[in-house]
Amino acid sequence: MSNWLPRILIGTILATLLGAATQAAQETDPVEVHRAAARAAAGEEHLALLETVCRVPRPIQTGAANASRPPRAVPPPEDWYAEPAQVFDNLYFVGTQDHGAWAVTTSDGIIIIDALYDYAVEAAVVDGLRKLGLDPEDITQVVISHGHGDHHGGAKYLQEQFGAQIVMGAPDWDLVERSTRDPIPSRDMVATDEMEIRLGETTVTLYLTPGHTAGTVSTMIEVRDRGRSHLTASWGGTSLFATTSQESIQAYIDSAVRYQQLIETRGADVLIANHTSFDRTPDKLAALADRQPSDPHPYVIGTDAVRSYVKVAEECARAELARRMAE
Ligand SMILES: [Zn+2]
Image (cartoon, protein in one colour):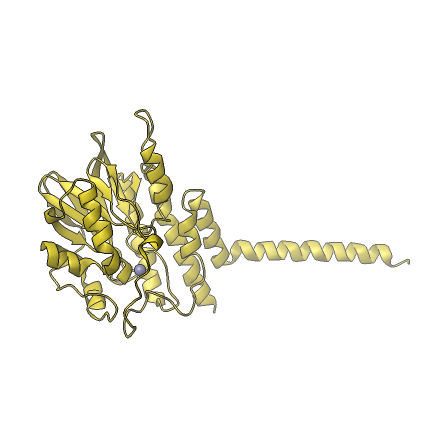
């Protein structure tokens, strides 16, 4: 009995010390430090991106390796079809439930950003344009954010049907040409860094942002909302795979740092994405449909929030790199 008090005291002191040590370890463990920074940057706006890029990659990935796999099954339209919608004066959503595809309209033609899976392109992009009162014959270029089937699968169709020029980063042309699952367009335009596609009064700028794939292309598009100018940013590739090399993760980080600087210097204030969860397209299209004349535009989130999105990607990649180094 006489030892009780000292034992409790020692126990308390030990527990306190251990707790402090655990907390200190978390504060200095680079994996946790970067995950915490990613969470802070994500706030409420970018939770889907945080969840996707900050999770530890699973060993077997879909989409990462396109080669030597059978053609993919076509799901029923109710599982993927989404209504097209006008988002800005000169920008339209023509994607699916899960994937963003965008049509930039100009006085000289239409630029499409991403071509979706091959099974979706006709209903979503081509019929989508017609539903919106636009003519798919006007498509001049199709920019592919990266060479995975959910973004380039419809490219060959658009190339063959409308003579559209397909634009992709050089390493992703190589990737796409090795595909056994998706139609392969013929190589026509290789995206270069800071390439400007100028059509009519509108410029779409392409930035090479390797990481998710070696040829990932991020874009910035001049758009107008009721005549007011804005600039979109779209981060071309998001998740990391177990097969992504440390070198590629470092490239991803470098790309993200640079793209944040570009967002800042160019004042990009609109976020659009090639996956609808990342830019919260379902919520935003619903908000747009109910928008009153005095309401702000739901896709205009401001330069800080756009930069924070890419900061989430950067910090999650830093956490993953630190986790690999500690293995
Ligand atoms: Zn991908």
